[in-house]
Image (cartoon, rainbow, N blue to C red; front, side, top):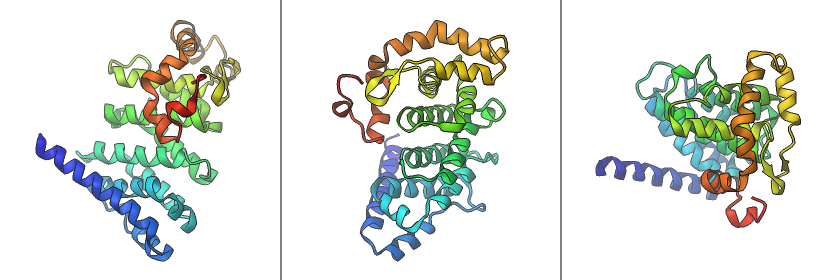
Length: 266
């Protein structure tokens, strides 16, 4: 409804103002404000969602505050807490906000490993076959898109196999946005894309390594990804420029890379 839309816009405006305010306050005052919006175990899902929207705004508008006060671990803990299912009917609102916070933090190349890995693990949990049923489709799509953006712009490092395994479980999802996000996540996590400007040359070494790690070409997981690479991923890799234009614009902007920056090789 119009009232709900207006309310959502107002909440977004308040969060944005809060994020900007933290950037102009003295460090100790800004730190106190941020700490007041760290998720607590006693918070219900709506309280989590509200706090996370403020944390997302701080990361977007005033990231220097987080770096200066070393608040990244507390923000990471807030994400992990919000992405721990608890049977709350408003869980989806908190989950989507938590994914946004995680995505913003992970795309910051200064995020330390002690924070980076738990955030990736939290996103994987949303789409992992063992736990995915505890989250809704909006959360699935958001998490897969976030993992794809991280794989594309930063890399998922030691969590590659976990990311690919989780994403592969959604490539046949009946929800088309989820399916497309999963395919793109696998494409970038295995570095099959052809994006020279970002260091992707379509090399299949990552695919071979993943297949070996999951039991070889004859294993169930190995057969699945090799078959999908032959039928779908190979074609997507050959049309990466079109793929970026069609589906990656938002992620590029979040990562500080618009179409103009990406250039002809995007």
